[in-house]
Image (cartoon, rainbow, N blue to C red; front, side):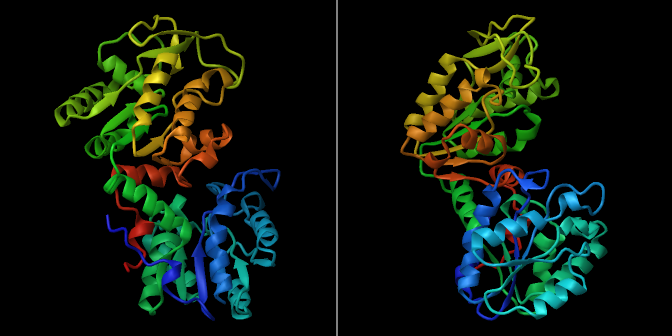
Length: 410
C-alpha cells in the first residue's frame, strides 16, 4: 500500500477554499454530544488551515440517516461545540441539500481564516454513491465549493463515498490539491507501518465476538507478526477446532475448518498462535450487560456443558501479558471478554495494563478496544488509538482504503 501521501503541510492554503472531510460521527443524547473524541481529533488540521489563512469548509456524515434528513441527525450540535473549541464562529449551513444556494452564498462571503460546516452529507442519498451518477453529481457540487480537498476522516476512509473518494477526482481535474489531514497521516503512519514495516518482535492481539469479522485480519497478520494472540468470543471457535468442549460459549461452527487451517498455517510459518489456557465461566450472559454475575475459572479444555465462557481466565491473563513484555510493536483489536461488565472486564484490563507498561509502540485498532482503553483509563499510555473501527480492521487486513488511495502521492 502506497503510504507516502501529500498532507496539509505540503501546500499553502492561504486565500484558498479548502474542503475538509472530517469524521464528526459523534454519539448524541437528547441533542448533546456525549463523546467529543472525534471533534478533538479534527482540531489540529482545522487550526493549521485557519492559521495559514485558508477558507475552511468542513463536511461530515452523522449517523445512518435511515429515516431521511431529520434534526436528530443534524450537525448543528457539532458546529456549536466546534465554535467553542476553536474560539471563533463556525457558521453552520442547516440546508438539508448540503451544497445548495445557502452553502454557495456562505462560501462566496468567506474571508481568510473563516470556518463553515455543511449539513450531514448523508442527508443527500447520493453520498453513498448509489446510483453512481447521482454520487458524481453530489461530488461535483462539493468540488464546486472548493479549490483544494483534505481528507481527515479515517473512520470513513474505507468507504468509497462521494465526499471521501469521488470528490477528489473533481478537485484534481480543476488543478486542486487532494491531501490528507494530520489525523489521517497519523493513522497511516502508525497502522500502515505497524503492518507493513513493524519493529520486531511484532505481537498482534485479536479479540471480539466473531471469527467471521476477522477472517482476513487473522490470515494477513499471521504472515506479518511474530506472535498472534486470540481472545474474546472468537477464541472459542479455535478451542472447539482443537477438540475442546466449550459448553454454551459463543461458537461459529462454519469457521471451525478455517480455524484449523490458521493453526496449521501458524505452525508452518513458525509463528506463535496463543489461545486462552483458562476461561472465566458463568451460567449465562449477564442481563442487563453490567448486572452482577457469579463466575468461576476453569481450564480452557474443561468448560462444563451448561456453562458459558465470557472472559479469559487469570492464567491466560498472565500468559498474554508475558507475550507483550518483550514486544517492540503491539497491535490490539477487540476486547478479551464482556468488558462492559466489571466482573468480566478483568481480561481486557490485564491486556490494557500489559500494553500500558511495555516500552513497545502500542496501537489500538479502533472500535470496542478503543472504547475499552478509554473507559478503563489507559488511553494516555498508548502510542496510538485509531479513530476508525472498520477502517483500521481493513488496514490490518492489508486492504487499500479508498480514502487513502484518493489522496495525491507526494
